Length: 179
Ligand SMILES: Cc1cc2nc3c(=O)[nH]c(=O)nc-3n(C[C@H](O)[C@H](O)[C@H](O)COP(=O)(O)O)c2cc1C
Image 1: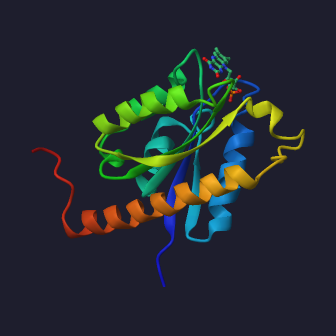
Image 2 (image 1 turned 30 degrees about the horizontal axis):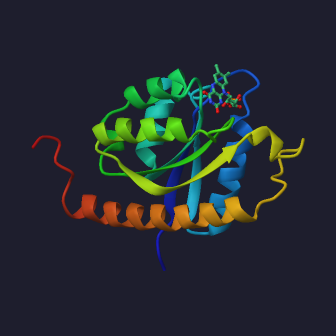
């Protein structure tokens, strides 16, 4: 029997009235439905800095839920990422993005560079919602779920592979803090 993988679902927006809750709730439901994972919600709008650090430390994989702001990712997300150090090391990071025409993909590509500096491994597969507000109904239900669900499954399969591989590797040999 394989062990549960704790996945931190990081909310990238702290904006009042944010759409991020709809996307993060959808992502968390997919993670729960998969059966291999336990989601941990990590929210810079409601967790204090100590809580954020503890939650990031508890997870062995992450899904960053990010919108796109002016072709980048939101400043509070950068602040959260930068406030935490070794807790990111040798762990996998996947992305669910949303926004206007780009579906948040420009924000994701920038985040890949940031997480490389934090010794984290980003997952090739991602899920992206262009004009996201048109894709969910007023109760937060995704109207046409087939393709995003398939993309999410592919992403979770690879995120799970990396999480298990890196958990085992860190147990056998701690990740070197200096080289
Ligand atoms: C300041 C600002 C800048 C934005 N810039 C972009 C952008 O460059 N590309 C895009 O696709 N959407 C852009 N959008 C649309 C957002 O991605 C969209 O409003 C999204 O819902 C924001 O996430 P939130 O509601 O969770 O904060 C922008 C929105 C805001 C508020």
